[in-house]
Length: 182
Image 1 (cartoon, rainbow, N blue to C red):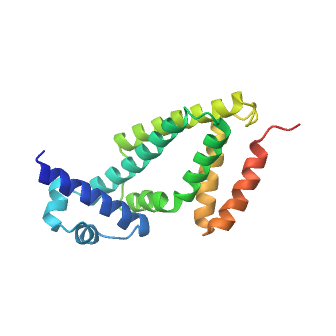
Image 2: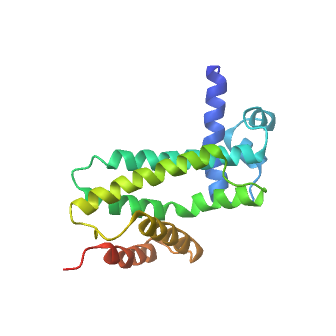
Image 3: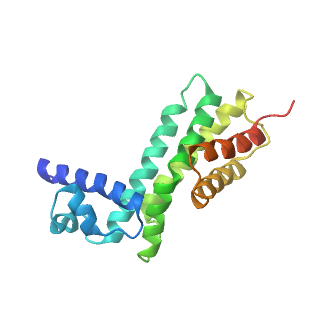
């Protein structure tokens, strides 16, 4: 890919992340305007709106996966685990808006998004395991349950429209339940 084409693609992805993260009903025209390219350029890179939405969702999941992998080497596993959990919940509204836009467009996550999601789950498991080994998270909490809490807290905070203070209270309750009992 030529340098100008790579640059256009990156600008389109950045714009799409912002536009669809704000509004699931946004259009590819909105993306093109924000990216400073013509609509034909958007469709050259992403033949359909669904292709663009899948690419943005995949990018979001890959970023989260990469962040979890980066945090896995932390000298403070509890801080890494709870910090990552907090980040996911804080960013959930825009990620869920992108997933909602994909559903509204008549599609579900494609193979690349599913692969990135599986990688995210695996990286999250590493954070959980390290926090459990350090005695920061209860050992009887399994990945399936804790991941369900992560998803539930994310969706709940978004559905309730919780601002930072409300999210912090919600997370304090969840985190209290995840900590070992004396």
